[in-house]
Image (cartoon, rainbow, N blue to C red; front, side, top):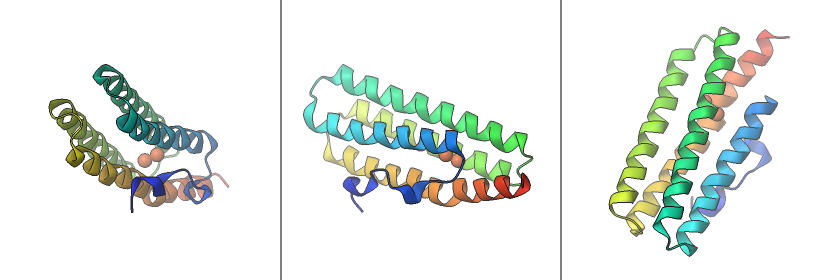
Amino acid sequence: MNSTDLHWDDSFLIGIEELDYEHKLLLRDINRFHEELKEQDEKSEIERCLGEIYSRMQSHFALEEYVMKENDYPFFDEHKQEHEKLLDSYTEYMMQYLNDSGSTAGVSIDDNRKRCIVDHILSSDKKMSQMVQESNR
Ligand SMILES: [Fe+2]
Ligand SMILES: [Fe+2]
């Protein structure tokens, strides 16, 4: 799967409005970053985009963890660990990019990381949302 396959698709919806909204924004920003990489040679602009994506991921995970806590979600710890792994992986990518900007290796690694984020939404976030919604019925 390449980066163009990762634009928002309604099959990514998990059914919790605020979280779906944030997932959309996150994918939008990551895709935008890919466009910047192609067009932008201003390193500071690329660094700014990387920072924005990191903040968005952090605040999104915090909101999701809040929703899980509020609903006594039984798989909270596993889910939080996945968030930490995604953040670590993204940080590693950021560092790699900053140390070796513009390399194609960096771009392809980012594609894998995008895939991991989408996989997390499709599996773990969907599972969590289903259980949370069922428990509130
Ligand atoms: Fe999420
Ligand atoms: Fe999540």
